[in-house]
Amino acid sequence: MYDFFYEIHVKGRSISEVAKEGELTEQSVYIYLRSLEIMGLIELRSNGEPCFLTLPYYTFFEGSKLDKLFAEKLRLEVLSQEKRPEVGMSRVCLTQEQTDQISEMVYEKVQHFHFQNKESKESESIRKNILLNVTNGNYIHLSNGLVNIESTLLKELYETVNCDGVK
Image (cartoon, rainbow, N blue to C red):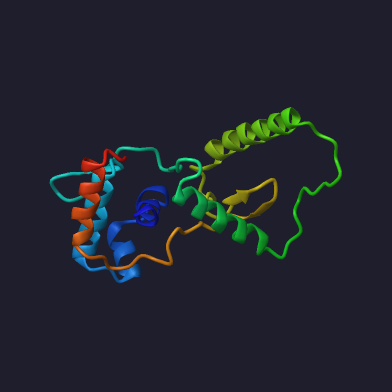
């Protein structure tokens, strides 16, 4: 679901383009869209087009299965790069408070630059991943690719969201 959401909202690709690339049936596209609607990320208009209810990014609850999956895929992506890190230091003496301050400063500065550059024509080519190590910004897919899905997923998702109170 999140990979589909990423393609149509974050990357701004058309639903038909994503469906064609993933060889998705009309039913599967509908299920992806309805699932995202049930999850509260979009609202489907009468013409079937999504109205996005969130900013074009998402985060997961820290420690959740999706958070752990994303962190592992990001770690593998970063560590698979042949290029040396642009910043690498060892045996430096820092307290936890200083480490937290550095992390916060880097995070704030990176967010500032990101929002400054994300609307530029080069936004795809300048995309990066940062783990105090800068690599090419390949998207971290949570799945092994978009696949056609069964309609029973909608019922399961609806019951999970509405019966268990999970959102």
